[in-house]
Each structure stands twice: as structure tokens, then as C-alpha cells.
Amino acid sequence: VQKVAILTSGGDAPGMNAAIRGVVRSALYAGLEVYGVYDGYYGLYHNHIEKLERYSVSDIINRGGTMLGSARFPEFKDPAVRAKAVENLRQYGIDSLVVIGGDGSYMGAKLITEEYGFPCIGIPGTIDNDVAGTDYTIGFQTALETAVTAIDRLRDTSSSHHRISIIEIMGRNCGDLTLSAAIAGGCEYIVVSEKQFNKVDLIEKIERSIANGKRHALIAVTEHICDVNALAKEIEDRVNLETRATILGHIQRGGTPCAFDRILGSRMGVYAVDLLLEGQAGRCVGIQNEHLVHHDIVDAINNMKRPFKEDWLELSNRLF
Ligand code: F6P
View (cartoon, protein in one colour):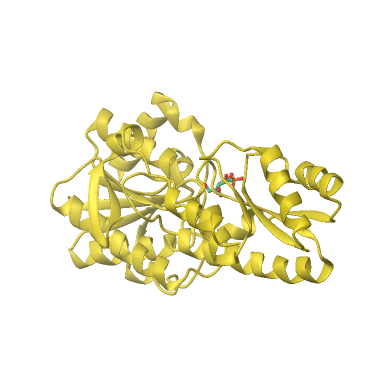
């Protein structure tokens, strides 16, 4: 390996910059050349590639988002698009690629590695914490802090007005962010994609607790499960307590990365370069039980499942 390129793809996540910096600085330290690809696979296809130096990644460790830009680029499923992307890399003499992103981004890395024998390493970067083979993805902890701060604020106003507050939290189809934020924020009710949503049951539970004297409540719901505004209306009609829904949305994606994500990003970035130097290809980086690990990308996409934290959900049932 002599020339490594790096890109960030899919939804941005706080701490991606630390990972970019980790890759760039450790690659330069090892005597490699480093190239930044702007705007993910879109930029790879359109040849938005630039050489990076040590100072290209100065003053970014503390910044949210990704200095390389990101994009969703479903066109990368097209073999002709991938052929052009690889041709672009080869034009610069680039011989390896680090991809920071989620599942979708891993898929691109897997295809390039398989079809062209082009060594790629994936680093998990997404607020969703939905990538297999790692306990944490870069960005999850920062998004969690953001969500908890929002819940705290909603608690203040719900409590003052004796209202019910529904908070919709991101995560795509993964309940990790919702579950963690709900426990830390003291939410009474948790609705996650991993469990069948039973609206009747939820409303009955709320009715019971109101009958027992409860005057406000917080309900955390993962996105894509139901229309939270419609749910708010339904609850309000049934339990006769004013109900408001708040969709936290992209607020959760931005902001200063917390120390955990900066350290995780830095460690994973350096580790990805180590793997390339060892001659590894088609691998993805993870952290499991505090240790950096790597897995086959195909396995991570197809076979490995992230276990749902049943015990956390069970615990939350006993906290209100
Ligand atoms: O994957 C990160 C994420 O923020 C998900 O939580 C959410 O479902 C999705 O991206 C939103 O995507 P977009 O930014 O393209 O609207």
C-alpha cells in the first residue's frame, strides 16, 4: 500500500472528522500518500479527489459533520458507475480506500474490493449505532447527548403544563438511540422498531398511570414507526391530557463531537491504516468489549446481527 484515499458517505456523524484525521495523520506517519474524496461515492464517481497533507486536517477534531462532505449516492449500485470510480482512483495511483459510513457505505466498499481486488476498509460512522460487528459507531454517543438534552428540555415544559410529550428519535430501524436516550432522559414509555408497536397497550398504560395520579409523561419513539403527530392527537383524545409531539430530526446529527466519539474516531482511523499496511482488504473496523477488532465486510452486511438490548428495555419498565 502506498497511496490511500478516504471518503465519508451516507448520513454524517459527529466524530467523522476525528476518523479522517486519524487516517490522514497515521498514513502520513507511515510514509504513505493520502487523498481525500469529496462528497462520498458521488465525488468518487465525479473525480472530486485531492491530495491531503498533515495540515489539511488541522482544527477539525472538534468539529461536527465531515470536512470531506457526504452524500447518498444509490447510483453506485450500477457496475458502470463503480468502474468509473475505480478508474478515477487508479488515475492518481491510489491503491487503497478507507470508507467511513454505515451499512450502505460498506456495500460500496465490499463491491469494489470484490470486483476489482481493490483493498477497502470500512469504519462505522453513523448516529444510528446500527452497524454489525461493533458495539459503537462513531457519532452515536454525541447524538445520544443531544437527544438527552432535548428530552430534558421537553420534560421541563411537559411538567409545567401537565402535558404528555412524544419525542421522535432517529435511528432508522435501530432502537439503540431511542432506548439509551429514553433511559437517560427518564422517559416513561419507549417505542422501538425491534418490538411490535402496540398502540392500544401504550394508551392503556398511560390511562392507568393517569388514574394513579400521573400528571405528565414522556414517550420516546424511534422514527419510521408511526406518525407521532397523529399519535399525539389520539392519545390526547383518549386520556384527556394535552399531548404534543416533537420530531428531533437532523438536530441529532450535528454538533461538537463528544470526547468518546473523538477518541473512537481517532482510534478507528489509525487502526484502518494499520490493517491496510498488514495487507488486509474488505474488512470493517469495530470496537467490541473495548478492543478494536475487524470483520469481513460481507459478513458484517449479510450475516452478523446487532443484538437488541432486551435487558435495557426490561429495566426501563421498572423505572417508572
Ligand atoms: O443514518 C443516519 C440518519 O440520520 C438516520 O437516523 C435517518 O433515518 C436518516 O439518516 C436520514 O437521512 P437523510 O439525512 O438523508 O434525511
